[in-house]
Image (cartoon, rainbow, N blue to C red; front, side, top):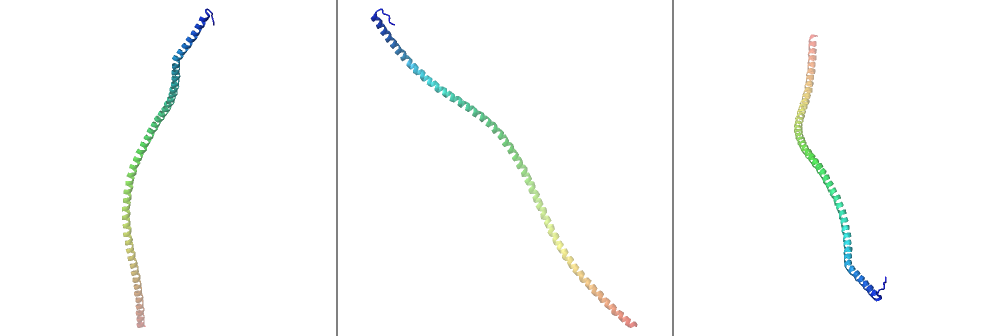
Length: 174
């Protein structure tokens, strides 16, 4: 755009305007550059913060998941604790019952042992008595056999005497 009013003057104005424009641009750039650098820096910081916020959100999600797991684990632990307590109570009851039964069995065993000892003594006494009775029966049988033999011998002797006496009487009678 060249308007010629004053040929020279116009060029001077144009040069001045160009210089002013250059200075103005330099001034604007001097003002804007730090601002642009700050904006760029802030943009980087914002991106960094957004990344950190995203990471924090992930961590919070993980923590929430872990917290949920911890609550579930707590519930499971309570259930297991109740089961262990129930089992422990049952074991104690069984131990008590078993102890009582053991004492009863031990008492019954000792009573059985005492009765068995008494029966053993009775059997030994009866065995000795049976042996004595058997020996006595054997002796009596032997004595009986001897007495029977002696009686037979006496009867036989009596028969001989009777036969002799008969012969003597027959000899006197005839």
